[in-house]
Length: 94
Image (cartoon, rainbow, N blue to C red; front, side, top):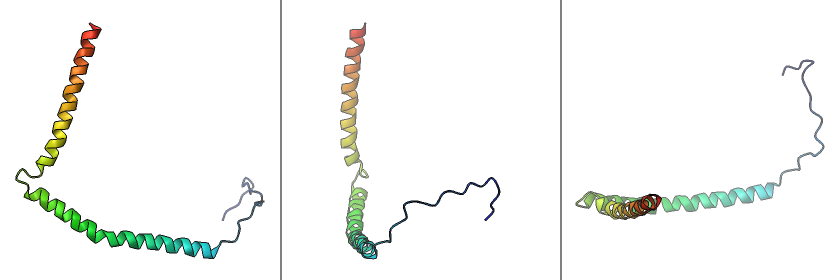
């Protein structure tokens, strides 16, 4: 470490750190490990569900577009409704 005349040395801290609570630390670590284990136990189930959904999309004759088309139709309806309101707004402005 290099110290020069310009180096500012801070004052000694007035509030010292408290001694760590090992029991609390180990309990919290154990809880986290249990949560991780529970999540890892769900992975095979989620992987299987993903594979089933993926196969369903692949086996769909339109390549899974039927689910997308429902959203597209809803979106198209919203755009139509918006354009109607935009047209009414423009008429009012004239």
